[in-house]
Length: 198
Ligand SMILES: O=P(O)(O)OP(=O)(O)OP(=O)(O)OC[C@H]1O[C@@H](n2cnc3c(O)ncnc32)[C@H](O)[C@@H]1O
Ligand SMILES: [Mg+2]
Image (tube, rainbow, N blue to C red; front, side):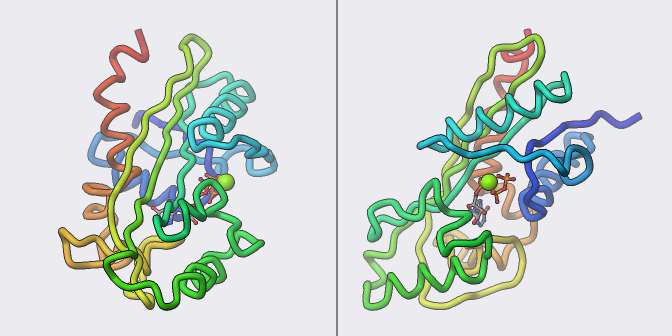
């Protein structure tokens, strides 16, 4: 039987990202879309870490199992770090297209060299017999003036990765995982896993 990793997310795009990262490690990814789809976890924290902990602990307590959660978002320098922890609902609904349009409108007239931004991801791990821990990952890039690419989710089509000369939405899931905020946070977690689980 394949080992499973439970992720406290209902975001299909994130679930795919996690699959690309965990498949090579021989884990099957299970999310709240598969189990606990009726469970709502309020994200009342003011930081990515706080929200990741809320999600991981709520699902872990409900299932009595080890759970990983991800709270993440886009921080744009020219917008004072917005949309930040409000990334999912920046334009009101949980609507990727509307969120992108809001960012592009707010950034009209801002020159390329001032369009720096980063994706940030806090991963929390919680379980019946461990102390909850968090791991942070980031990925630096620039906000384009219009969308490029169709892979990924969220703000990926307007997030340009200078080192690769492509947007996040022009990367395969594996390429994204190798450089993304999510991949970087997960790599920190897996390095620490022996200490987390002891
Ligand atoms: O809370 P869960 O159920 O995990 O799903 P969510 O979409 O609400 O997730 P968050 O609360 O962490 O909000 C993260 C938002 O930040 C954006 N985001 C995070 N990671 C991203 C990525 O890798 N690519 C593009 N956008 C991303 C995207 O808009 C997400 O909806
Ligand atoms: Mg959320």
